[in-house]
Each structure stands twice: as C-alpha cells, then as structure tokens.
Amino acid sequence: MSNDRDLIERYFAAMRRGAAAEDEMMALFSEDAVYVEPFTGETDPWVGKEAVRTALRRGWEQPLPDLELNVRRIDITGGRATSEWICTSSALPGPVHGRDEYTIVDGKITRLAVKIVEPEET
Image (cartoon, rainbow, N blue to C red):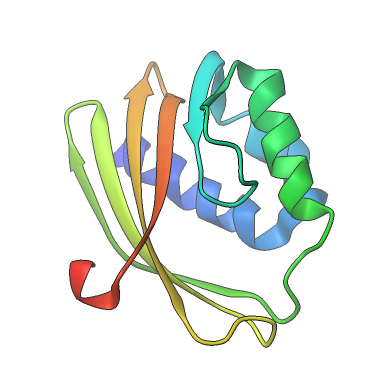
C-alpha cells in the first residue's frame, strides 16, 4: 500500500510541474487507463494512455499562474484510493476543492476520476 501512496504522491508532484513532467505523469498510467475529468468539457471518459495524454495536454496549454496544489489527505484500501486536494491560483475566483478516486493495478493507475466538490464535501 505504501507503493500506492507513493504513486499518488508522484501523480501530484507531476501535476504541479505540468507539461514539463509529461513523461513522468504518463509513466503512472496503464496502457488501458480511464480518465474522467471536469476540466476539458468532455463528458465521455478518456480511454487509453494516449487519450489520457491528450486530456492532460489540453490542460497544459493554458497553465494556471502561481498554481498551488495542496493534498489534504490520501486514503488507500486495497487497489483503490481517494485523495482530497485544494487548488489555488490568481486566475481562479477562489480555492477549488477536489476529490480524486483511483483504481490501481500492478503499480499503475488504471482509472482516475477527478471531481470538483464543495468545501464541506472534502
């Protein structure tokens, strides 16, 4: 389980670095990974590692200035994990709270669902 925690911590470290950490980020995902996110406006999940890369690249095209991404907690149970985080940037009207739900198999993220939540939900 400590390896799963390390995987999630590496995900957040890469997320903070953005496009400069693309290779490190993509190494965390399985070839058939599923990524569900609220950022690009797409309603269908991104399926497959290259689709995940496409989704992430869209976000990296317009990075948030002075981004701070603080992880509040990581909970791991078996091959599933949940993290709660707060993102701040001068481009945002205020802090954004989120929850990520992971499925991890053989040390890789096979499913990641990112949700924006109300502060009291985290």
